[in-house]
Image (cartoon, rainbow, N blue to C red; front, side, top):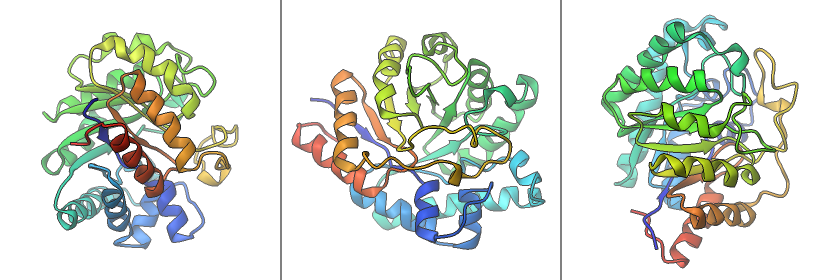
Length: 296
């Protein structure tokens, strides 16, 4: 049996569902502005379900996204608010770690519009610098191309914190990144990273990604989403998540089946992404314990 780190589940979609507000391009950032305390409540529910890591609500906190709606001046204030809510949840629970999330610049799943290296790296480094004093590690999420991996990893490592890299893979062929490049080609680029994961992709795609990532020699993991597909409407500028739809076949039991298969392959870091919630993490924690695994 193994020690398994149980991440939390989705934050942005969980906030949208709980708030009942119409989604905006600011996504979870808008909900955090409009409903103070809701992010903390979600973090706490994940801790109660068995998760040992709270991933900060900073995925979409980038200057390029805030500029579009005229609130770039609130960048550091919003970063502080997200960190405050994660810390409050950890203190209320009395245990756990905080992972500072860095999402993609420009847009998710859009390697074609990711900024050039010299432009992207300092922007990622700025986010990492703000996160570093108040988090236990940094997780670079939904990395869709080799260029994205290079720039976000360089920027995040400049903070001096432990860094995990999470790539998003093709929903039909998990051996490929969203860019069409090979997951295997990420492995030579990850010097300095402490773990390699796949995220925000169909659960069915994860085994092929895990097979390639295990070649890195690093701890490997996965956390899939519950979307039916990444639609063409979503792959455009300023999308909102109502362009996506949730699967009806990805309840806690079914999702946990996928996760346990990843653990059987050698994954030691698991959790959920968009359209997974505390009930999914509770079922995973139950299954891990029943199988004799330890969640440290």
